[in-house]
Amino acid sequence: MKNTLLGSIYLILASSIWGGMYVVVKIVVSVIPPLELVWIRYVVAIVALLVIGFITRQKWRIEKRYFLLIIAIGVIGNAISIVAQEAGTMLSSAQMGAMITSSTPAFMVIFARLLLKEQLTLKKGLSVCLATLGVFLIVGVGNLDLSSKLGGISLFIAALTWALMSILVKRMPSDYSQIVVTTYSILVALIVLTPFVLPRLHAIDISQLTHPTIWGGLLYLGIVSTAGGFLLWNRGLQMLNASSGGIFFFFQPVVGTVLGWLILGESIGVMFWLGSTLILIGVLFVIIEKK
Picture 1 (cartoon, one colour):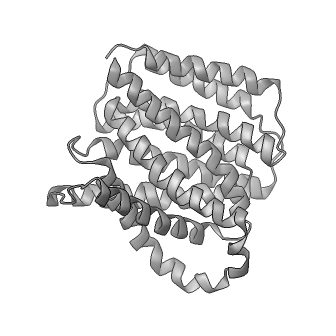
Picture 2: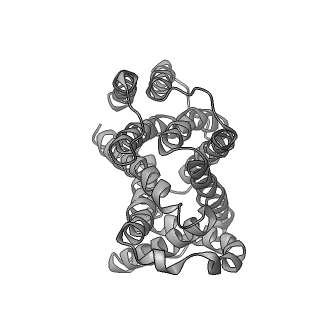
């Protein structure tokens, strides 16, 4: 029960951090395009993770048989998913970004069943259904323009690939430090993205990067959201089973919607509070579930 509670706290913190990330991305992406933004935030994150790793004296050696798994985590989760997520947020809204990517737990339950052979219990299914219903109540999608539709497709791809990455993380042995696993997977993504980004960096207006909002956003995305959020998420997943852990992703739209309303002026209504209640009930089902 102690591990369940502690793992739940880690996942709630990670999901809340990512909810705030959508607002930051919406602001920063007006200056730095999505691909370049992902690359820059990973450069910042790598520095932060290496400092943390050396201070805590991590063992950086990984057995060769896990190399392909690390590469898959880096390419699927840290490269494809994050680029799709930031592109989708740019094309739509912070609120829609948080809502659509919160379909991740449903895919996690499916992938956990297929890849990890985890049992799908009635309580897990009910918690996912309640939380999913809550998300759709929070954000009503009416008539969408082409940009929002393309953004929605991109965000759907982000949700699908992040779910697959989260299950792949569970296949790493628990005795490997999450600092090491996260650092290597982000390094893989950085290597993959570099050939596409370097020829485009000159197009960024350097003068705008000196604005406190922009460089503060980059520090948040690199250190808090990427280094901190990934570590909390991966550690939380190690302490819970994958299908139960995924339900905590639903804290993301709650935080994203509130901050979108407060900072970006995006609309919020009664359905938000009703949806939030259903999400919290769904999460409570997971917390009280006996292992």
